[in-house]
Length: 223
Image (spheres, rainbow, N blue to C red):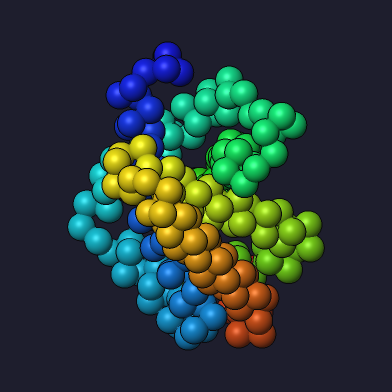
């Protein structure tokens, strides 16, 4: 794999926005439904996604394989890039450095989150009806809460700043003025998405999800 491959870098950039960026936005909105409407609305959002036709193939080709390629190639770029933050201390250079750092953190976080949720579903240890109770248990662990907070902030920054770089590298924003405007818009996206995720994290700690968690635990004991 050549780090200087034009087409490889273009594919890596494209997948970071479409479909992975859209997947992150969908994830933020689905989780936010826990804050907006409690367990019932959250469960309805989860079922709406998992009831899509050919969901396995949609996830495989539009989520899991793109994540694998974008993540592995992103790790290669992160560990072969010259950050230069000590020599050139200006905003865009620091954003470039943070893009690489948050890329590594995001990839680790996604693997961990998949293990906690999706892998457990595949193993038969968790059902989609138990997602709310599982998130309640995770969010009530102080260490997990902090790690999730770091993970979602890293993921949202990586996407938002990556979107700015995508617009530049694909020739959509040309010139300093356009790039300044797009930088502000992308940082606005970062703030909005971060707020959505953080609100959902606190929602999962709520009494409503505590009740769902208790019901799930008693059902397992009866089973």
